View 1 (cartoon, rainbow, N blue to C red):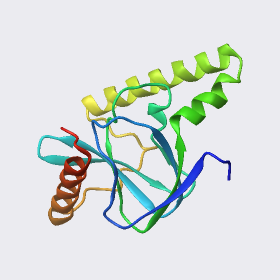
View 2 (tube, one colour; view 1 turned 180 degrees about the horizontal axis):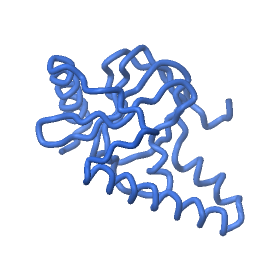
View 3 (cartoon, rainbow, N blue to C red; view 1 turned 120 degrees about the vertical axis):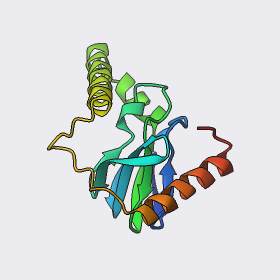
Length: 155
């Protein structure tokens, strides 16, 4: 592990990050499972599932925009947290054209994802993990609300 990697364990049901909060990390799933949700009024819309060797939070690396989704551990999960600032330092060492390509690809991906969500188009490549039952959704929403309250975040 590089000096900037930080493994963190999450219990099932723990909020890793919430939609609307500032982003400082990229998360690499070492083990377990994380569900990604988009909040839509009083609903949580399943977006994807991240499992071992997957990563989440990649769109925030090149942007200072707040998180566009919420992430919840749906099993005992270990992630490697990599600071956005450390990734940016590594990228700075690359020629400018490499970082420009990465920024452009990130912007295009974010735009494509936003368009797919807006039109509610499901991509076969993305595994949203299916809907959660009403009881679980209520628990997840409560966990997200408590997380926001602890961190002083507003939705």
